[in-house]
Image (cartoon, rainbow over all chains, first blue to last red; front, side, top):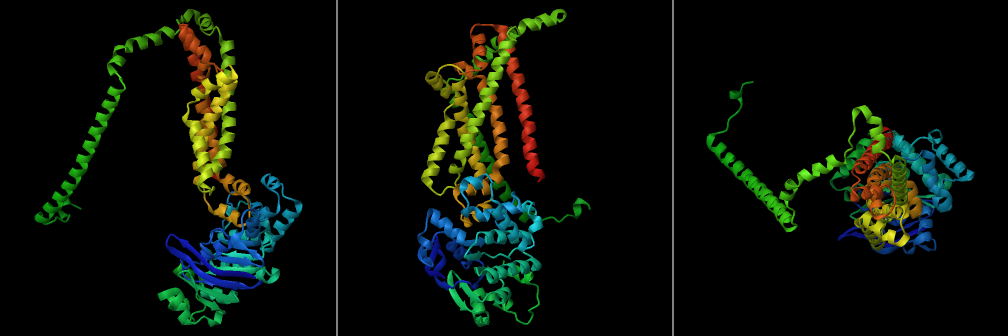
Length: 266
Length: 295
């Protein structure tokens, strides 16, 4: 279980994340929703420790994540894999190498720097790639792939980290509707098949309701909603999204293209 | 369309706008004139204080051209072969020394680039969080490139004796400073997203540099290294002035002892070599950068 207590992160005088407390049980699929600048990204980055908190604590089991440093911190990062809106692959390396980079924390620096990956690591990486239908792209340079394909490579990289948590920072914000579904399905599989806790930032309420068993709404760095999808009333949505609420929870046209709605809040 | 069909402003409005425009541009022009005047004055002042006398240049221009004329060999068309053989009487020795010069530049560039490579990552603001480490790396590189090669060479000749070793060391140290700065600036311009992606997987500093930074900087590093090799060939040519190996010693000797035709013979050899190296490395550099662009 991931426990967040009074987590705060200030940039200058502005608090991006402001006194957030959450408990995330193992195996859950939690969607973090809210408009741009609400602090969703910062929250995930704090959990992975890409940013250090100004105040508050993060605990995972008996580990005090906020106090970690050095090798213990790197081990924690391996345990909580992260995927990004812009995929953050190394564009000039091939796809298989990109996935193998997820194993770095488990191999010695000497062998990895010379790219002497073990047969077992290669097998793991190839299998992960293939499970997201990307096996045949293994030799291609990552930057030559489409956005949806790159995100699936990034998910494969996350999976071979053998993580306990997967943090997804707006994983579908730069994808078309078909790739959006592919990527969200991949995340769902990771959650259901491997029992990995997923924490996913989303713009789209429809997607959040469809995929997540719990929603956390953030506004101005604070948690303003915590509950199940159907608990999310128009009133709460308005608080989350301000004037755009009407567009966000327009239940009368559920078939409207997802991407068009996404753009409105990008 | 004829000009008289274009719309014209009412004269009073136009006059007001025109006056405003002229006023604004006149102020700008005045500032530029004042700035230019200050520049001229400061150049003259600097020349006067440093006792740079242009008159001396014009008065002695004749002896400069005379020197050029004196060092040129007298070649007769009917006996050009013996004339050239006489001119290049020492070609075997000079060629060997020129080869030594190239090797000094080559080894010095390689060793210096290796040091620059290692230090560039520590000096890059986007990779190193510790300001102390970054400060130390940057000041060290600064020191290495601020002291001229020839000064390092002088010191090393005293320490290690005559020969190419002090030359190589001097060039390596200066190269490390110069390339280290260029390299670290390349690193500071990379796309940080892959770096973040790698850090988030739990990769360490060395691994992050190896897999997220290196693929982005290698071609630029290679290009800068070749450029530096060009510079170092010129630098190595004068290492011999202080006894640090290469062709420089014979050139200096020829000048000091008024072996006129030897000066031109050696100078010509150096010029041809430097031009050849420049052309070669330029082709290589374009190939390296071109391969990158074609991807």
